[in-house]
Length: 501
Image (cartoon, rainbow, N blue to C red; front, side, top):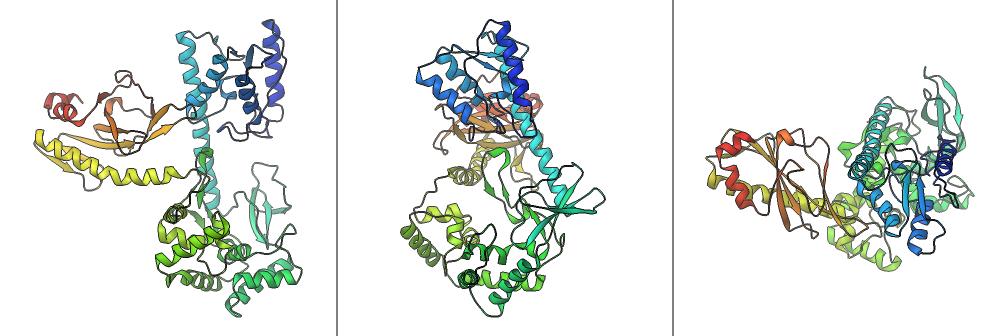
């Protein structure tokens, strides 16, 4: 059993009743229950009950012969539908039958059950994607209206609850949440003593020329804490000096962690903001002066010097992180490294440090962007040999006109390895281009070698992202498959085929 949030207070109870009824009707005895309460189904992370179930199944010492599941989505709303299928497969491989108590089919391995399960798994993932998209757009809209979206307010600030008429209802204490859907939250200046500390930090930095560490040491010597009884550090002072909320700006979407897949740092043009949304504690002109000083610290340092300083930190600590970098006196900020080298991960790689979190996807995506022009140029060159003319659309870099009759777009799809060891390819079609034909190049596990090509006419182009396995039926996919460009180019050159496509 699984429930996503604490708002579904009776969800597991309802599931347990349904499962118990199913067991009674089929002469089964329930000997153990695995329940993940208040856990998202987007990933295995935090799913301790599911992990225990898989461990028990694989251990071989079992006191049960079947697993009863409320419905397909209780495994999880995984973005890769094959993941939930894999966990069911582990059970069946160990001789454990899996029964779905509320699904309208028997899980007996017949073709109809297989199809229904595949559809249900895809629907479970699609539900999360659609909900995530709706929530994100709703949050962006509220940010633009000046309302706060989640997160602790920070030192010197408090959360004020407003009703639907924007009238104050009272401050929210730490851990408190709004109770009405129509209520909203804004930031307001906190206690006078905290506001005075914030202003003293800016005064010491600008007028007395103290650095962050010296300011932190002074505050600690006075017995002041930064909140929750924690001592001041260079990093907490730096955060106060660089966060726009202290001048009343509401900024959102600096980082993304959609569907709990990958956490990414977004470019500034993707940020959602509302300037002047809250009452400011610091005058904007003082804030801008501070930003100029912080930015100037690394301007005089060349890239080799910055990397040498970062390498020294790595050698002395054995690890690196944005917070650790910001805590170091005399070292450029993590933001400076990200700006100079195109991201912190890139800076880490230049000194030989690999973070525990798997950031390879960033380098792979960068490599794909670099490869795409070469693949497009190769396609254009070969097409010109058999077609009258091939011209690029100046408004779209990845679309070309063939004989002024139809358009063609090229897509690269990287190879993904599942925990089972099998490989999958996820194709995202840019429907805004609306090409007559889409050429998909499928990459091998090294993310450089092209395995084969798939040729999708627009009339058969899938609406949603498409998943490919190691072996695919091109007819089922409504696509043409080629091991190389040569036969594909030959077909494209035939006007009859082009008109049909």
